[in-house]
Image 1: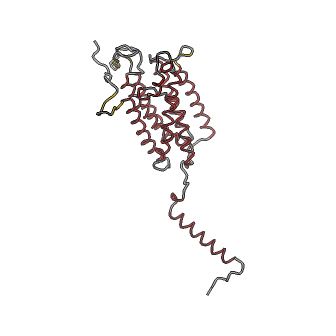
Image 2: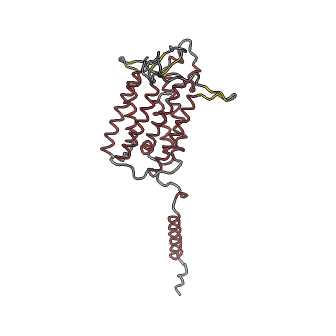
Length: 308
């Protein structure tokens, strides 16, 4: 008899009258709000303006959700387009299924659009929000707990996860890989925060560190999972993806450190007149008055200035 384990919720949906509250979606939404809040604090600390992170998130978050869902549907197409499956389920994002690789890739495209519209360098923005993304992932992973999905192999450790019988799953105790990844993401966030303060990381290196550290943990956690997945040379596809992305992140970190050491001095330049200081406006007005007076004096046929 097992005396210690992590129970799973009997349902992933709570109903407030006719309104369903889905645990998976709730975790994703909370993660996004926390990421925007904390990313905004880091952006302001780097010299940016309040509200900029939220404005760019309007682009990055929708792109990220679409990218995450596309990656999941493409890599697990058999769940939606095989015989007996309903392709409409591919749009039911609340039932689970977001690939972090697609979310980061397409989310970066959305962030690039938002940064370009404000004249902000994308690497600087990425550095500011890197640990915030890791924290959002840590929160979002609890959505898998509500859905009783993405668990690991059977185990009898005291922190085993209780899974009830359901479609394509057997009741029993399994490794809580959602919890492992959640804790790993918190560790990644703390690592990036420490390294950023200690070494003044810039030009995308804080983000590269986040990517490399996350991939290192995702590889061994992914290896423990028992859900259906495509394999290549005996390893799950996501293990290979984590390895390739890890190498790319490390290479970027090393090359960037040599080519562009240090941190950006200006992350968000002033772009509009309303953001200028009053003294600057007064000095500009005086300069314009002086120029206008000189132009009148120098004009042909103009009366000389009265010097009495």
